[in-house]
Length: 569
Ligand SMILES: [Zn+2]
Image 1 (cartoon, rainbow, N blue to C red):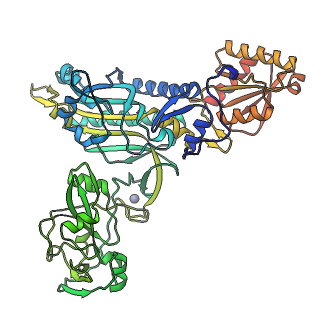
Image 2: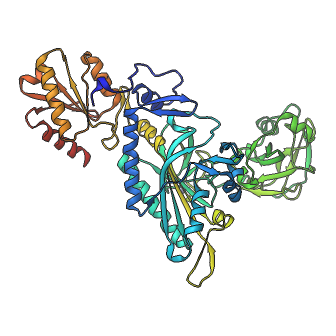
Image 3: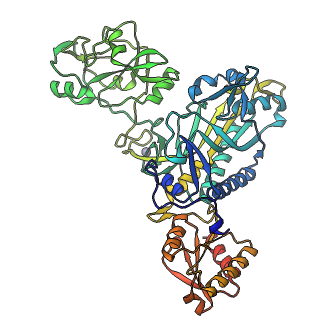
């Protein structure tokens, strides 16, 4: 490819709105262009890199026994009603109405469509196990698109679906996919970590995410350096400590003038935060929820949403709190009626807590559950944080940020039961098919690779993903000797199918070197009057400082040898 003909321009500065490194560099390198919030075009260089990622994913899916197919983007809305998932997807589901007033959805994922197909084509246990996948564009109406390709509304994804006859089969399919994902990350040069995750809108009982640890990630990961326990903060558990071992004492009202926040109450009464119970108010699908949790802990809203089985969850407004007759700052479940109360199980670990007295300026001392109050639900709804104790081994947990670069789910039978996709087992008994699904976003991977692999000059592509592997960089093309040697080298390398970007522009060496570094092409070949004196060309890897001279004679053979050595490193 001749640089002078390349569609797309490199930029010296990233646009102000680009916040993440990958967003800045992909825009500056002319690989992507933004059309609207969370909607991007891939320009030729970006598209070449994306297609290489796609090829690697396809090879690993095929190797794992996946069969590629292609499902429609337009999905009948009835399918989403049958599965019940239109509710959990909520406003993230793009919908439209056709000219005959039929409601359709733009696929954010394809469990419904593929289950419908399985219902038709899977009849007996002999048809199982089955692994089918596609690589296709998905649509999700994200509330906050951000980070360039990291969170978008239209994106290409590989989604594979597994169908099995029993739990053991599902475990095997799941393991096979996890291994295929590990192979993909290894080939892309991404050190992805596997962590326990919440199933979210997809549903199911167990799921894992593959996470690339990086500052710009929007997921928080909790992990144990001692035993290897790792989970998304949405899902992470921790070993809760006991607040004390005291015998319950009689409930006693005390004046706490001016102490409204839990910190003020603790300091006023001279107790640790863990010796207090605080109240947090939520609105869950429009219903008022009173949450109680020990003072030193925070509510994990994902866990709370799962416990309540609700879709919409937000903090209640001051008006809503007033309306149910609660006194913010002095509220507790003691003596409260007609409000749904959800408690974190931390309130059972200890006794004689300080809690609100439901009137301004007063708290209770020695509040004890269940002696002094009842709750509707009790569960783990607390947020795990760095410094908490590991649920497996008790060591101190640490927190890190990361980008989700893959997500796998054991769906089980909840979709196949609702959509009546069943099979006949060996005894001729009809059973629901056991499902799994496995997603990986291509653009997200592209961005993650840039987040992982760059320096202050630009992108550093791994050889496996680079849009071109070689950057041919002749200096001072106005010199006929240089230009004719450069043309000759270009044609020779191209003839040997080496992926080469030829910087045939009449630009200064500084501009050319800067662009070569920004684009991140792995191997740079510099041709100048100086190298021509020894009938050679200077080769330099993007990742290294040292250069070496290659003879112009048999250049293609030499370059191939270098690329081969690099790819097996
Ligand atoms: Zn541990």
